[in-house]
Amino acid sequence: MLEPDDLSRRIGQILRSLRRNRGWTLDKMAAVTGVSKPMLGQIERGESNPTVVTLWKIAAGLGVPFSTFLQDPDDPRVAIVPRSRQPGVEDDDGGYVVRSLVTAADPQPAELFHVFLAPGCTHRASAHGAGVTELIWVQKGRMDLEVGEKVYSLDEGDAARFVAHLDHRYKNPGTEDCLCLILLLYPRLPGVSWP
Image 1 (cartoon, rainbow, N blue to C red):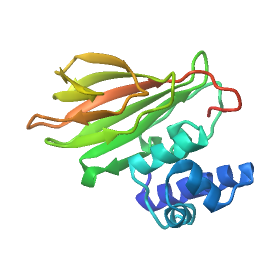
Image 2: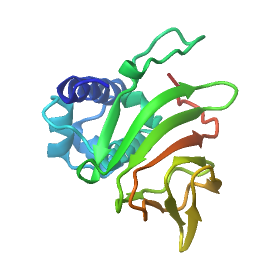
Image 3: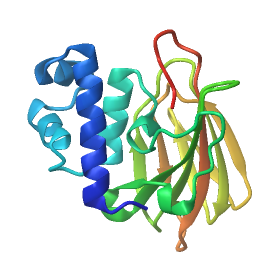
Image 4: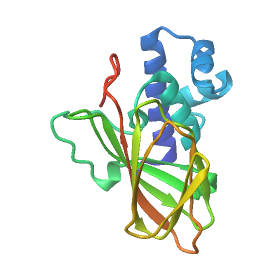
């Protein structure tokens, strides 16, 4: 995993590039993403290590994949991503860590993440865009998955699929760490390019 300062700088450079390519001011980006202008400025300058929730808001507002901020562009025909190049970000005081494993554009836009949930941690995820499907496989431990108003208990080895335009939460109700893989499947959208 990259050091936090290196990752913060890379995220800032990517964010600045995305904003400038659109011809947007920080005010415009704040209005579109729901993230404050001062916070966006700090992120662009590499002075702030944004949380998972903040990055999701920015990605959703810009209409780009979350992993846009985490992966180096390489040869698009083959993606071998060693563990040392799988950047991750933390939320909930380190109780929730998401690491981008790999991104694919074909045959369907998708992102694969490795997620760590500490015992007792609850992470609220904002709704994804229309047409996004989320698949979860619990590799270790237990997870309570709340989608809309309903809670589903997942044990080690269990899997789930749901339409991700609904607000959802991940909770580790156990006393051991929970590790899971999350695959996001996106609809093809005009004007959105994938790494």
